[in-house]
Image (cartoon, rainbow, N blue to C red; front, side, top):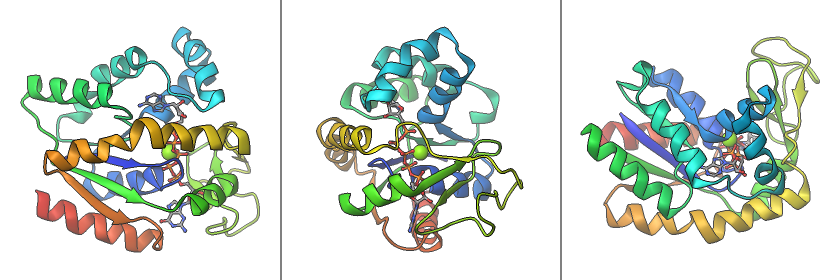
Length: 217
Ligand code: G5P
Ligand code: MG
């Protein structure tokens, strides 16, 4: 199963991607996570990506398409994957279509997580991520059971992402509107787009996505 999770910053791509990955036993491939890992490792790629990420702008197509091209041919992606945060503009979507055509592996579905901008801002400013296991929380909507401690791995390293400040969030939302939102029409024209109300409870959203994917397969 090859699926794209499309949606604005904070719409729940990471949260739903993780649930789908567990449910179907296929990897969640997040360009944001891969880029953050490169920045943390201080690699050449990370150094090139950092300024754009801090500013809330898109990292160059050349870099992210290169990352995806390599990642999709790894053995664990053979049975399928969930793409989270890629593609993010028309050039990336076209590059993905070309890659998949060459592999003979079309996308089955594109899920659009639809959430109002006001809700997104609260989700992003309230998000905390476990630096050890990657679990995602929200201090307003879904806090950990014990303050500042990860429910899943017990670590006390729940951090706020550096791009989750008001100025960068505003830029990210603007970039989404101008560059990523046109992909809705792109995938609708391919008959692959499925819109999901992303403001429901996490479990409800997951249930709805599950139903769509069962039908698409
Ligand atoms: P990322 O890392 O892809 P964004 O901005 O697209 O970053 P983000 O912020 O990671 O997306 P998300 O994954 O959609 O958001 O959302 P999430 O983390 O699951 O949930 C957000 C909050 O809402 C959490 O607190 C969660 O608990 C809560 N929540 C989630 N679901 C629900 C729900 O159903 N109900 C409720 N009540 N709450 C919920 O990209 C970062 C940067 O990397 C670069 C760019 O610079 C980008 O800005 N980048 C790329 N550049 C170029 N091309 C690409 N393809 C790139 N990909 C990344
Ligand atoms: Mg994410």
